[in-house]
Image (cartoon, rainbow, N blue to C red):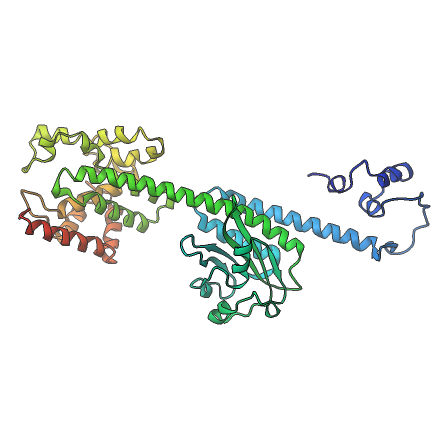
Length: 449
């Protein structure tokens, strides 16, 4: 660790030079530095009982030294807390990072509660994104006007603010207290800014003992700077993800545009797959990958001839063999985009079967990537319940029975179980209602019987 004394009192200071000439090297440098400059050598006195109480400028050396040590300990705690939260600052799961950061602030500032408020880019209103402590959940529904309360003032001016008696400060708004039944005594609030763009504020509320001080402010400012960067990076990542998904959806729509009978198939399979993934409690990153993989699972059909893709009747064995190549074609298309490589297994293997009789590689059981096993169930369910020129789609209950009948042979039993659980919770209702509306419109226009 860097020598704090050397940093605070440079070696070229004349007082220190005088001390070096007159004092032994084991003397306490911080105490002697506080007495600078030295006008004459200090004669040593016989030791007395208790700590030295010589005073300079009205403050004892002992109290100054104790204060310096306390400040150093406080700064070390700030660094330790940052080290704890630091690994989360680079993740895209900002929810966990923000919760841990606010918890660390509450601990460091020794206060009752803390909050992270963000500025809505559209309305400029300020809303509670994270609120911990008593009544934290109650204030999350509150949205402050751009200049309302201490948070609004800090968000507008970009200046940090300590208010140790909120009732005496006209900038304080008690609307949150009235809503939650909480009584705010004092507040420390600092802005969060990224590249001159103010995105929100951090608040610490109700110091447990005493008042908020400069060290509390220093710790909060450090956290605010780090959290602001993490939040902004997360927003950029989300924008990139939305762009990827929109592009993937457009490609899926382009395939479906070639065949009216498959309209909406990609979106339904994506929606089913995401709900099943959530039910199976897959991590957020895995859910994102499944969303993209399900959206692009049939992208390889762009390489299949229209005479086969649009054939009104059943495919013959040769045509079926060609059609089966779409999963490999799709993998080759998507492999050209480095950011999409994690979803390649879902595209290539969504027609594998649990008993090893699927294609293209004949994978079996757990060897089939989980995202592919999920997409396989959802893809088949939608295919069974969708109309074709040569047949009417199966009733939903019949399709569900077929999934259970094929569990353990064609499908992963755990995925079928999760699919059924989503259905039992009525979470598919909106998707199915939308499909029924589309189906009715197609029939009225002279489509499938």
